[in-house]
Length: 184
Image 1 (cartoon, rainbow, N blue to C red):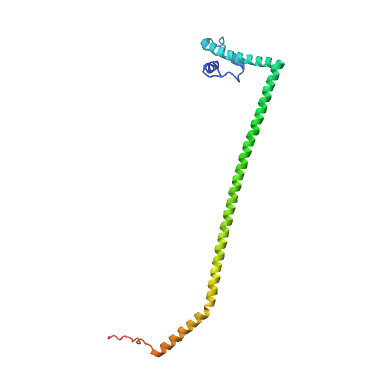
Image 2: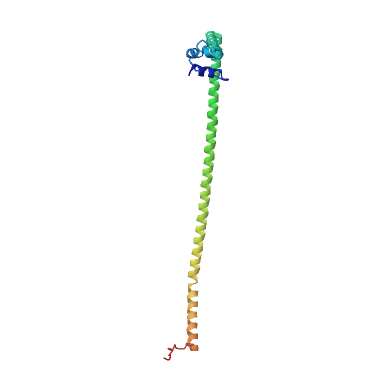
């Protein structure tokens, strides 16, 4: 980026100064290097410099804290407590996820069991219907066989009556067809 672009970027509200090479940035935005826009360059340089200075102070303070054995021990206790809490949260999350998985598996098992039960019930009903239909068919055939003699006797009586009645009356004969003769 050009010095002007860096100055514009650093003067925008909410601008961050981290993740930049501080030496390159100071060369780009230093007021002596930007004489044509020295007021804005000074403002950008001061903002950047102050933030960088605060960052360096924070690093120095952290270093001094870690050099003191009592403060270092407290920091390590805080870190260990944080690790323990993270591990506890992780175990709890695993427990919750495991419970959800087992609940889902149980729900699926119950659904499958219900489906199998319905299938068995449906199959038993179909078998019962088939058994009843076979029983009715068997009964019908038995009745049919039992009534065979009656049917045969009835048919013979009918034929005998018909043959006697047709001989006794002499029957009616229709006229014979005659061919029509046309004059001509």
